[in-house]
Amino acid sequence: FYALADSLQALHGDGDLVVHAMVSGVSEADKEDIVRFLATRHNRIIFYEPDQALVDRFVLLNKWTGAVYYRLFLPLMVPPSVSRLLYLDTDIIAVRPLHDLFGQPLNGQAVGAVADNYVGTQPLIGITEVGEYFNSGVLLIDIPAWKRQLVTEKAIDYLNRYPERIRFVDQCALNAVLQKQWYKMP
Image (cartoon, rainbow, N blue to C red):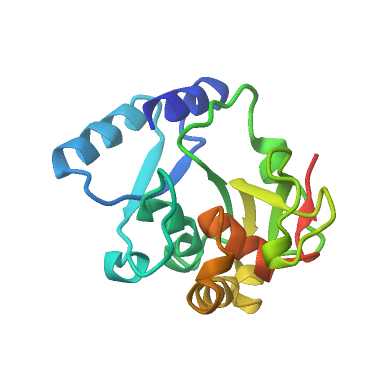
């Protein structure tokens, strides 16, 4: 997390960032250290803890932990005053300011994302055309559209009904329920 946070702080002005972080198993002392780290540049962080019992029901493959499913719940947990989120996996390093990305129009879609060059297609969930499967490591989320379209609820239903189709955890569920209904970002 610190590498991502440091890269963001280096590229943005003081007080420009509000981080909404889903966490579990992070001690209060570690949370306080993170708050202090971000406060050095007058930035803030708000922590949310998922219902771990709900997350533990989902398919886990390979090296993943239940934390991969947190992004499904974050749009429902942030305050109503938050209408847009830029979700970033913690293994990302920002190399330029994110203002333009954050302001990208989504043309009515709940999610803006980039096609996944590694996975390409995912026939198990009905995606057979290259460029139609997105990577969920960076998501621009329009929260009102997400809620209207019941993205979290549909993804959970898909995970519960079709666990045998899941290869890339939450990413497969999101792609399954948002087929041809996501904004392709460059």
